[in-house]
Image 1 (spheres, rainbow, N blue to C red):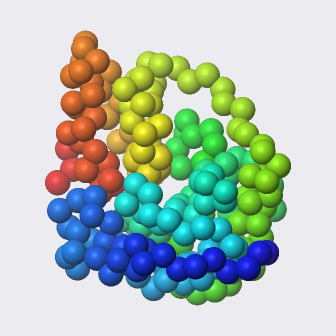
Image 2 (image 1 turned 30 degrees about the vertical axis):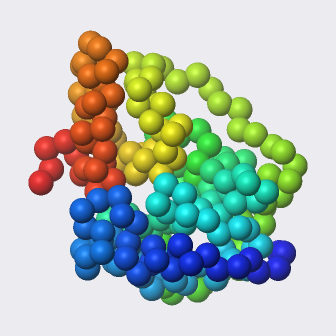
Length: 213
């Protein structure tokens, strides 16, 4: 592992107020507050890796020489570390998960309590070190073609623009993902598909299906 990196004040604000991606920002109901202890337990492990701590897509993102390595994020039922090139990690402990069926590069580790993080701290550190080694080696994920009927171009464009949104979408149940995709591709015009995606982004970040309340 390399030396510790500096703490970024923007992440302190994220932990104090939430991500600001929904109206629950700065309220006790924000998902970030549900996982305060866990996020604060993960942060020193990330900082000790020597990665640069940044705020991207309104979430803590840890980078190596301007390359994204891992996101720290809060979801409804868990918080997670999401590795951008997790598919290239060896995963000897079998703890990496695909966020969704069609995910090719990203892999995440879910956490639901602080003790889990304490117990896995050395393992988490080793996985981060391997992810850094992947970047140093210039390795890339070889993407396979995805059926455009499954992932409309407008949705893929939003994924490319906002990886945090892609991770939130892929964290949905398969049924919810399918419901959204069918609704998006049901529009004949690209502009309508884009507007439909924008309309439901917040529900997706909230882990909800189209008809959930």
